[in-house]
Length: 165
Image 1 (cartoon, helix red, strand yellow):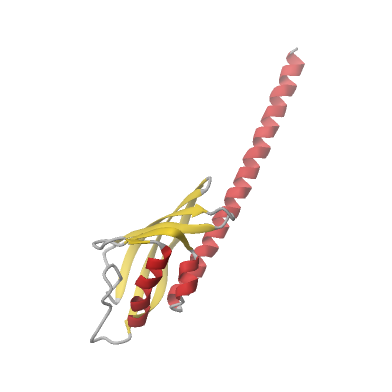
Image 2 (cartoon, rainbow, N blue to C red; image 1 turned 180 degrees about the vertical axis):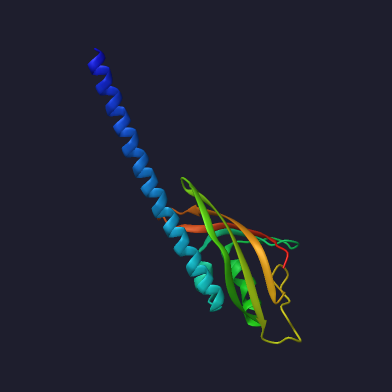
């Protein structure tokens, strides 16, 4: 009986380690997919490519800028971006790349960027409420992402707070 118990325990231990290894591999694949999402997002910002920017957003996204009303939904987010990209060009300095934690079909990403803004018309500036307006904006970001029915990750909530310059 003792031999059989050891075999059962050894089998359970093996199954647990194999399952844990699979979970780690799946999680690593998710983290890599999310890291690619952020690379694509940065590229979209720097090229003022609204369709590519919105492509990384969940349909029910909420942009939560400090001191401004939330922008709700990907279509509204796209409309929000039109005057923003019309007013300025943006360059992103990555201070800390996204640190991603995956919890099933939800993930959290925390990162720090400095956004450099070059106004196209300094006399007008960026007029969109909730948009970055300073030449240099340092911020810590926290996003919630969720996996859609096709297994793709998308930004569901996007928020930040300013860091001292």
